[in-house]
Structures are given as structure tokens and as C-alpha cells.
Image (cartoon, rainbow over all chains, first blue to last red):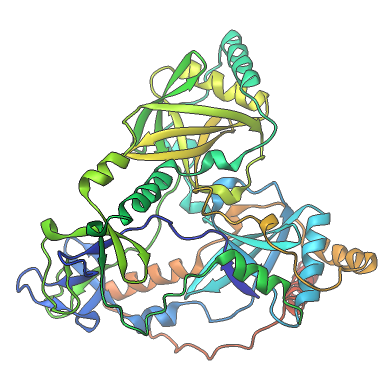
Length: 240
Length: 262
């Protein structure tokens, strides 16, 4: 199976530019000597005591990493609504590879019919992830999950123990909730207004030449703007 | 140890206000490394350089640009960016209440606990009302010069707030086409249901551990004591396995486990 992120990347990310508009890069340097450091000149250290580090090499991390595999290892099926939502981190659509479409559709159909989610582990970029797999509209989606020790409980945070609430206050709030209740969710209400106004401003400014800088780009640079939805539609709909 | 509140505000409910504090519900467990200078073994600093000349560019000289096409940027000045900042506010405004679980988890970004700031009874009264009515609230607020949208839910007597992704970034399954190919037959579905039932259970987060993180922590501990364990080289990449055989393998493994347990 192939994985595609279920969200586009930040649509308003800005680039740091120099005085002439040239894109800048971030670079490490040694504070004492001021010497610029390349990737070969730096190491990774874990601080065990104040300013005392254990050096861990790339090779060591690679050897500690889980075995590279493209398997999605299903451990369990659970009722789809039973996973506390605090666990969910990031979504990915799963797209069947040639030859596995039948099994994919069967799994998606079975999960949807029985309202189940699959709990699985898989390895991505040298790290093992715990995921919940959901079937939605015949499509499988994996949500990466936070592990139990990555979540705090109310008592970890130090929230007070529950106090009996006055019944009159509860009823007052129930009335407020009833008057502001809707049945349908309109996602447009969730559009980031700040991002929208940033893009609007960009549009307004770009008509004035003084606001725009152009730099020579290397030709090899891959600049194809990928429409993720189109890519997904194409790979899901491909007849194989 | 109690966590520190990251923000204080007022939850606005009609004419009522509930003073609240915001706490992160996430405990970062990432094994954090520092980037060190290879020779001095000291922490390094970072600066911005012009990649062509290698010269450092001072902070005052750095401009911010939005790329409208390859190599073409619209400059946004500090004043521009300041104007885009929302007016400061301490209010968490409710846009609307929806039946529980209306908003897919796909929107959720990060969970926070909402705790009372003083008035404990009013806080628990609202959490109770939200649970009784089986509703979640869509809310808006401004925090650290940024506008947020979120879902507020009652979880075990407390209020949990999830920040939400920008609507224009989320891709939903119904925007996509279903995978090509014939639909499974009733017989196939019945058989698959039987197999899936064998793996069915209740979700218990404690059953799963980040084994890679544990291995790294263990390794660091040993290496700090001066005894780095020898690690085996990585094995060659295994062949890709199709999903059906993965599923079959999982079920086979589980069968064996159950047999052993019996």
C-alpha cells in the first residue's frame, strides 16, 4: 500500500529572503570560533548532565531503528468510536498497490459494515508508528497515534477533583447549549481567517512591481505544484 | 507534578462566562538530541546565510516572502504581518454546538485540557451540561497573536479542547473516488467478518509501547556508563507483502498465540 498525507501542508508558509530577495538557508556555526559547520562537522549528542553529552551516531540510530518493511501489521480490531480522540495525531490515506485492490476493498467493506477500526503498527522513515485504521467511503485512512505515556490525565495536569455542580447552573447551561445547537457541521466556518487574509494581501501586493522579487532558480529544482487530491483520485481510480 | 497553564481565558456561553486555564494534554517523550560541534563537542548556534556567497545575513536585513511562482516572491513587511494579527482577546467564543462526534478526528490537531480558573463549580456545571446534552462545541479564540478554531468536548467530567486544522488543508474521503474494481460479494464479506472477529477486542492504549524510543533510551543509558552495546547491522529490505497476506499472517499469528494460551 502507498501512503498519502490526508492534509495539505501549511498554505501560508513564508520564506526567509536576503536584502536582494535571495532565499536564505539556515546554517550551524561554532559559537567560539564562528566557523560555519557542514553536516559532516556536527554530531548528535544526548545531554546526560549539564553540558555533558553522549554522542549517538547515525549508524547507531539506524541499527536501533525497526527493520525496514512496508507491512502494515494489524494487531487488533476495535469498535470504531472507542479510541479516545486525544490519541490521534496525523492522518494518511492508504492507496492499494497493483494486485491488492481486491483485498483492500474487502477489508474496507468489512470494517465499514462492522463499524470497526484496525489497530496496527508500521514503519515510516525509520520510526515505528502506532496507527488506527478507519474505513471511510470505501477508502482506508490511517491516523498515527500518540502512545499512552505521551498523554496526560487530568490528575497529571493537576486539575481539581470533581465538585458537585449546582443543578440550577447545569440546567442554565443546558438551555444555552440547546439554543445554540445545530445538526450540521459546516467546515467553511473552520477556514483559518488569518491565512485567508494573508493570501488576500499577497494578491493585492503582487500587482505592484516593487513588492515582488524574482531570483534565478536552479533548473533541476522540482517545482511542480502537486495537487494532492488529484494525485489521490488518480491512484485510487486507476484500473490495474 | 502539576503542569503549568499555558493560557488563561474566559469561556463565553451566552451571557455567562466561565474563567478557564489551558493545559497541554500531551507529554512530549521525544528523545531530544542536541547538535554539537564535532571537534569541541559543544552546542552549536544557527544563523541565516546567503547560500551563494556563504555570507551571514543579519536579522535586520532578513525579509519574509511568499512564493507565488517558482523563484518569485511577494515581500511581506513586518507592518503587513502585524496588520494580519487578530486583535488580542481572552474570550473563547462558541460558534455552535453539534451532536457528539459530528466532527471527524481528521480535523483534530492537538488536545488541551481546559481547567477551572477559580470558579470550580461553574466549570463542572458546564462540563456536566455538555455531557448531558451529548454535544460538542465549535469554538474560536485568539492565543499568542494567532487565531484558533477548536472542538470542545466533555471527557470524564472534564473539558478537553482540540485545536483544529485549517479547513482548506484537510482532505476528506468523500472528495476522493472509491478504489477501482469490483465490490466484494456478500460471501466474501461474511468470511472476512469472521476473520476480523478473531482479532476483535477493546482498545487499551497501555498494550502498546514505543519500542524504538525505548531501545534508543536504553542504548544511551548504557553508552553513558561507557559500555555501548554492539548493534547488529540492519537487515536487507524485505519484499513488499500484499495486504491480504498481511492480514492472513496476522490472523495466523494470533491463532498460534491463542493455541499457546489454551
